[in-house]
Length: 276
Image (tube, rainbow, N blue to C red; front, side, top):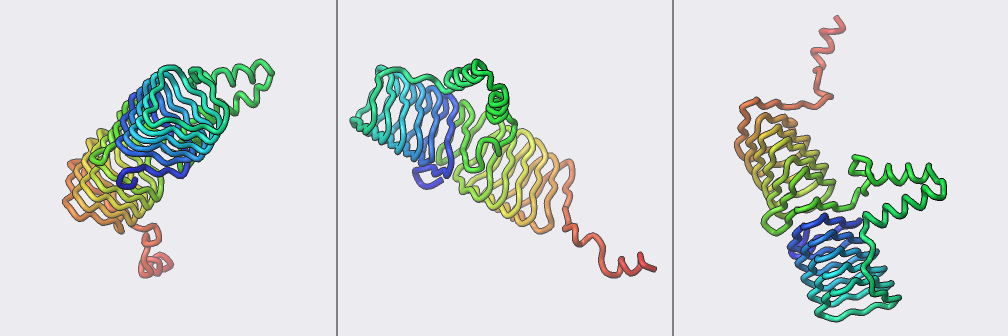
C-alpha cells in the first residue's frame, strides 16, 4: 500500500458495495456492483467492472475491458484489447480502444461461470467440471493465488482503516497502512502493518511481522517468533514466542503463555542425568 495506490502482484477481486479510497495496480481486476475506487485502476490483464460502480481516476488495461451499465469513470478509459461496454456508461475523460468495441451489457462474472460449467456438462466433461468447482469453491486461500487480493462485500479501505465484515487473511511480505477492523485476523510472515488491530475473535500473527499499533481482541492472540508489537495487547488470552517483542503492556484475564524454542527443551546437564 503506497501513499495513494494499492499495488498487487496478482489479481484483485472486490465484492459488491466495497469502498476503496486508493488507486489499484494489479495483474487483473474484477469489481462487483456499486464498488467505489477513488484513484486510477491499472491492470496488465483483463478488467471487469460491474454495474453502478465508480472509478475516480483513469482506467487502463493491457488486455480486454468489460464495463457494466451505469458505471462512471471520472478519468480516461484506455483499453489495448477489446472493449465490451454497457449502456449509460459515463467516461468523463474520453476513451481509447485498439480492439473491437461492442456496446452491450457484459455478462456478470457469476453468470459467465454458470454458462461455462453448463457447457462442460453438456459436452460430458465431468472431470473438468469437478476440477473447476474445486478451484472455485475450495476453502483455501492458496486456491485464490498467493499474491491475490480479495475484498469481501461491503468492505472499506482507506488511509485510516481497513474494515471487513468478516475474517481477514493477510499473506507474507505485505506492507499495509490503516487500522484493521475484522471478525478475526490471520497474518503470515514478514508483513508490516502501520496501524492497530481490533477483532472479535482470534488474532494469529506469523513470524517476523511488525505491528505499529495496539492489538485488541475479545478472543485469543498468538504471536510467533520474531514478531514485534510496538503497542499493547489486550485479549482474552495470549500465547507469545519468547523471541517476540511487545513494547507495551500485555493484559489477558485468561493468562499469558510464553512459547520456547523446541531445541531448548533439554539442557546438556539434564541429558547427562537421563543417561545415568
